[in-house]
Length: 454
Image 1 (tube, helix red, strand yellow):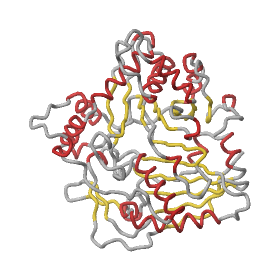
Image 2 (cartoon, rainbow, N blue to C red):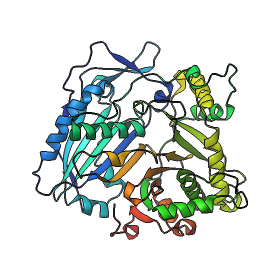
Image 3 (cartoon, rainbow, N blue to C red):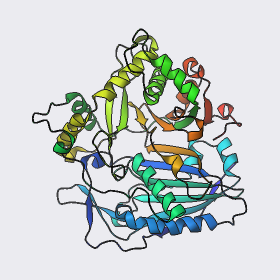
Image 4 (tube, rainbow, N blue to C red):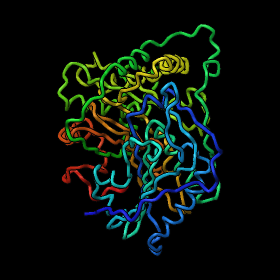
């Protein structure tokens, strides 16, 4: 059994001092995520001849160089006179944990689960003395028999999974070439005139009503033990799923995207195991709105928006109707609707005590995150990537992620977090088994495939 032990915990500060008196306000899309956090783990194979600690030293030095461009990460949280969160940009630094794991990275990936993996991305809840609490944590774990895991965790208040990936990619570029390809951009969300010149904007009540109902719910209490399974779908499997998800007799309708098809597949499967017979379980999707709002690629901040997909009327677990319902909701989420939501939320700033993933089944589209391009050294690419949006306390969570590019443009990895008994039953679902996906991670050992390539 692989085990992780800490070597030390230190603070890494930027090589250049932060401009005195600099502050970064947080948007309403940031503040709505106050009670959530993000954890990411990337795995690498390293040269066997490398000495212990050599990779960590190199990465620690390049991290210090990179942090000069990320004052929001080295700063600390404060509240304005109105009670809104903001960042005081200073040189307090980022916490780094250096650790060591038994075995090799390949052996680890043959026999790991949610609990083990989260040991590779250290996280500490918000400390009551915010001046001492680091909003970002980095963990570097060397495997004794070869390999490295890079874990990063942060409060969702400051960063969504897209930003975390952008930061890791910038860190890799700094380590490999001494410069960033895509520098971060810290600016406010766009105003309406930047998104749409319509003089009489049309409201989007469905999206606002969804957020309104979420704000009115209390923060739920976790009861059942959660586990995470990870399943890989090849290019051919996803194309088959898309074909099955396309409504029969509707040749003029566009085909679902890989995300929409896989989201529909697991929406149907999870509804079955939860025993629903009339319609599907309530599900919300979470999408990155950067492109919709015309934001630059390097925009640093939360820009993921949730919306509910109605499951009523989808009888007999019809995959094509499930995928089509998801596609219709995705199509409605345009710039005008998102700006209406942002403006409405700006008047509700004191009500953000909710968990955005607290009640529904949540399905998050992360299929365009660029994690596999985070190359820290020549010829050493990530071989495996995992993402978590914590805590998961509702009906469950589905994350749709990319696979390594060599596996085909439509190949995807899906991470599903559910109560343990439901996760095991999900793997026995006949519709999911029909595609013969590869199980990469599962808590129950009998389902773990020892010959799965990460």
